[in-house]
Each structure stands twice: as structure tokens, then as C-alpha cells.
Image 1: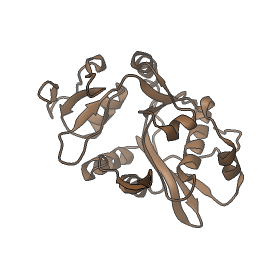
Image 2: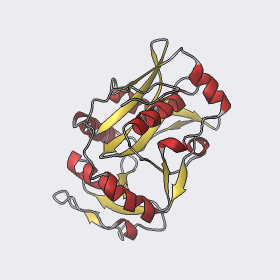
Image 3: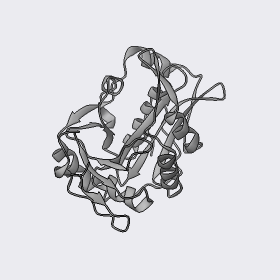
Image 4: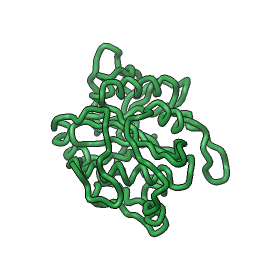
Length: 243
């Protein structure tokens, strides 16, 4: 950790992403704070915070980068059947804090219960401030009046940066993801950053691209006008998308 650049609270600049470490892959800097201004500056340069409670704030920019475009979404047969049912409702920005709390809570993986310790109370407060500033958004899926799944992330210009998702009912997070990409496609958002790949996302069409290519495209997208929240989703499965 002593080899990492240390960010001072009064300065918002970051080291060039190309200076990120190879081990651990993508680790760029430590310290600083989670102010709205710093987080906005970080995302504009493809950098995101990821650390555990009790650790200094750590900033990352991995190479390669996991991304997806709205037109690349893959919907397998069982998910298509689930989407075709009419027993769910999808909303946006109606209960942001509940979605973040659910993403931070224990979840089942590989037959074991895992706790999402990286979404610390400090991180939850930071993204609440981003939401209040109109930059962070949630998508919620409701079944029988209960929150069945959802996701949250950050939007700057015409780029969306996914942070986390959760499922309380089967395919809850996937339904949220499909509707998010449908709406982003309607709004002409060409790129969704998923940070790091995992089998769940890869099955939906998320793939890796070189960091240099990701950052080059990002520089253009983040200079477009923002679409501040709260968001309303007009797109509904199976489309067509609406403005």
C-alpha cells in the first residue's frame, strides 16, 4: 500500500489510470474522500471506489474492463419466459436507499451466505448524496407489492456505470437489468460499464474490452449533457423503446 499514490482531501485529481498496479490488478490510488465532486471526477475517468470496512478508501481502474451495449444484451429462453409474464412492475428511483441496502446485505452464492462488506455505511451515504444530486439511480422490480430485485449505478453524460444488483425473487435483478438497458438504449446511452466480469453478467452479454479503448470512448460520452434524476422508465418489455 505504501507504493500507492495517496489522495489528499483538498485535491480532486487522480493519477493517470495507466499507472494502476498489475497486482492487485487495477488498483490505482488510496485515500481521499467520497464527496460528490470526487466521485464525479473519478467516474469521468473510469475510476471507482472499492474497499472493505476498516480499510482506507481504494480506487480502481482495471484492465480489461467489463462492458455491455444495449444492443448486445442476450436474453436466454427461461429469462424470456419470465419477462413475458405480467406479474411484476419495474420502476426507477422510487426507493434508492432500499436498493443499496439490499445490495449490501447477505446473499446466497454457491450454497453459502455471503455478506457484501464492500458496500460500507460510508459508501451507502456517499451514493445517497450522489442520488440526491441526480447522478445515481436505482431500478426496482416489484412482485406482489414486495421488492423482488434491483440495481443501482451512476450516470454521467451518456454513460452508465453499474455498481451492484440484488435478487430477492427469481430473476429479479435480471428483469431490472433488461429494463435498464432498454431504457438506456432509448435515451441513446451507448455504453454501460460493469467494472468486473462475472458469470451472471457474462451470460447476459457483458464482455471485456481493453482499458484504453474504454477510456477513449468514455472521454466523449461523459462530456454530453447529463440526464439528472429522478428517472422514470418509459421502456417496457418487449419494447419498442420510447424516448
